[in-house]
Image (cartoon, rainbow, N blue to C red):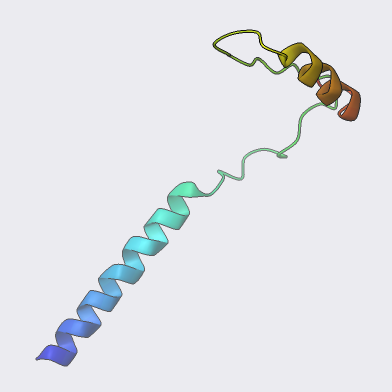
Length: 66
């Protein structure tokens, strides 16, 4: 009886894991990439202490991202 219960528990766990992984996967409907144009990021901060320097450095290291 315990052996059957273990098999049922393992099968249930495997089914739940498969469903969780499938739920996190992509839909496969797109190419996954953009059109190659510029990207603009919006960052919400509480105040302005030195972020401008960090943003400038990030933009310098990542061309096409503003």
